[in-house]
Amino acid sequence: MTPNQQAILDAVNAMRKEAADEGLVDKYVPIKWSTDLEKAAFARAAEASVTMDHTRLSGKEIWSAFPSGNSVLGENLGWNHDGFLKALEQWRAEKADYVKKKSGGSTNGGSGHYQTLISPKFTHMGMAAFKNPNNPYNAVTIAQAFGDAATSEELVGSYGPAIQYAEVTSSNLSTVKNKAVVVEKALKEFRTSSSDQSGWVQSNGKWYFYESGDLKTGWVKTGGKWYYLDDLGVMQTGFVKVDGSWYYLSSSGAMFTGWGTDGNRWFYFDGSGAMKTGWLKENGVWYYLDESGIMKTGWFKVGQYWYYAYGSGALAVSTTTPDGYKVNGNGEWVN
Image (cartoon, rainbow, N blue to C red; front, side, top):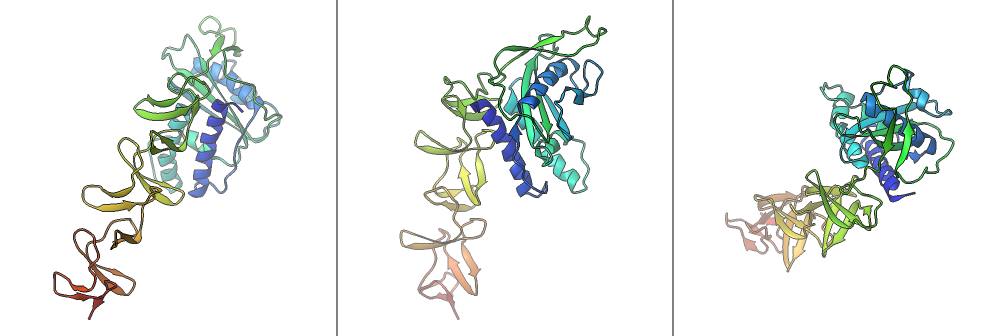
């Protein structure tokens, strides 16, 4: 499995698992790569680079490009200048509309690409990119073919230069090219399999991180700081939830530890970066952080007891509060 193809599969399967975890589909079925469907995607990307839609140049049904042995078929098409992962990002953006429609709401946006991506009925896929010199938008066509069976799960190979002939009728020959060049549309900004790409790369306002050409996802440590990259490799900022814990990432993407504030509220992040809730003792002083991680001040109740925290968040113990009430050594209000 090449890094480029593995990055595609990882991104698709992450979306499929997320959909299952959120109840958008009834089960998680990890998808596999198929040589036959990859070949079909080659043909479909070449044709779609001319038609700019799901029709075939020959006038046949689009399913005639797919290999035999598949009883359920699907296709996603996309056009952009940044390649495979950008196409997945575009289709993933339909999730909000899909959720609205699934809950009975109405929306003007489409959600078919996202629905196809997460559908458990599809067990295999292939993906290819084509650039047609006659395409008026100078865009690369991305095709993703889905099926429920495949004769082979081996990879065709890297997306190097090659020629793919599209089916055309005689009436089309005078107006369109009947061949298109396969391109490795990972590009300089989206490279996932080139050994000369390392470190941070910015593309379309988003940051990505590479190690020896491999696009990284999840937690990455560089320059002594931790960063979090989502399933498509995009660097995250602000609050993110990972494996059940909340973290805060600064505007630079660096993970925060210790006390932090959003300007109005205070939070505490332990040495691992995870946001703390409940009781916290630091330097001999007790603090209380509610279920949202917000540091409490003033009077607050935990269980059956009332407590008082000063403006600094420090718990009042064995004293009289500013409003005249006594608290014991545990900070509990004493009648």
